[in-house]
Image (cartoon, rainbow, N blue to C red; front, side, top):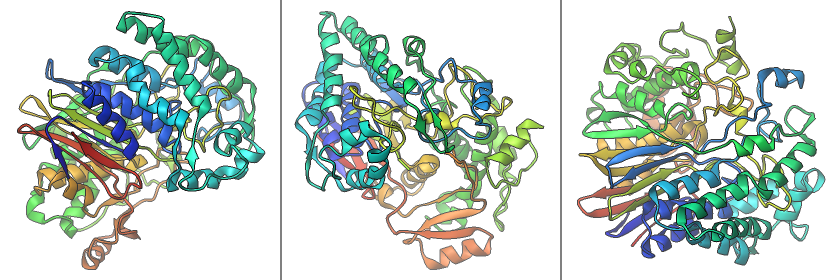
Length: 570
């Protein structure tokens, strides 16, 4: 575990962690460092995230002791209506690749919003490490190389712009090869150039974001994506629905998170434009059980956590959506009274095979079609956590804009995200597709405060498992007294009981995936209680990163399961 006194950074790549630490050493605060780390991750891990993807952010500002969420989610284009998709023959789920799921890319505006409202540095300062990595290059890692190799044939035959970026000499890069991204570097330089046209810091930041959303960068994206038919999972070719007006009208927003108390902490999550509130609902359910007495990863403990997560995720499927468009009943969903009612559904002797949302009848779920019917009557993610000695803290979850989901936009150097695949095409669903709406995603930073001060920033990549693993990590710390690194390394489990958030949105009812380090007798007891137990590798699930501030000491940890994840302190 990393411990220091000035600042700590934990990130999905060690060079990104160093970028954030450089900013902290240069008198930047945690928000400046988070932006630098985030931009660097977009260069280093294009198979995990990119500036065409998404990045929800939670910020604790020591100046007023308030936690805020910055909505790093794109919005659906004006042309993106359910009727339009039906006219295209898309009636069930939006393809997870190609251009039909492309939304307005929010990452640049999100980090600029963080800098404008909470940071101290100019964009040129925090972009400098990412620019250096893109221009001068960095050694190719195993994960990125393998991702390029897996999709090289598609690049060569269908996506020539991606082939030019990822196969610069026609071949898959070798591990350790110095790899550069000159087009992406030129995009960064355009942003810095726009900022430099203004002497005032705030005006410069605004000019930089306008260069992307109202200038030549947006024009290049719209022209390419709107005129280049791309074959997607539907088996047909489609262009994007994005227009210049969608870019010009976009703005990342700062808003209140949702939160619940737990064992002396106040745990904050982004609202229901993410799946984040499921962790809060699970905590409400679990506070009624004596978890520590059960023993860590005992049969009772795993069974109880899994069954409570099933209940929370059932509510996700039936209630969560962009709160700007739907009324999500958080006053009830996060109340102690509702949790007490739902807790009675947990049968300690038997695993449930049903999806049981509150207020609805139980649903036997095999796929998203079952959920949609009720309403009608491999890319992953990365992570960053930052804390500084001034009491500031940031948790962010960069994702999307994956190299394997859509082609690189020529002259821009990055791919668009496909997060629109998470919308429902059933009009009555709270997560239904509507122009200007944010899809409910799996991306979910976490930030806990104690006694009015920042205490713990944490979270994990992993799609629908993100909050399952973040929950276990938090319980490891709070209930079982583990250090951050012990909590990040402890054996984990997760369930696929509910419909996946990703195309084609299949479910695995009753299945619990358990790391091999969980003892054989525990797995046998879970089987006896009716769980379908599937064994996964000893170190194959849970990729938590964390940063903590306690008693003047800053700590950070990174799960060893991440190929290049690393924590650093100064």
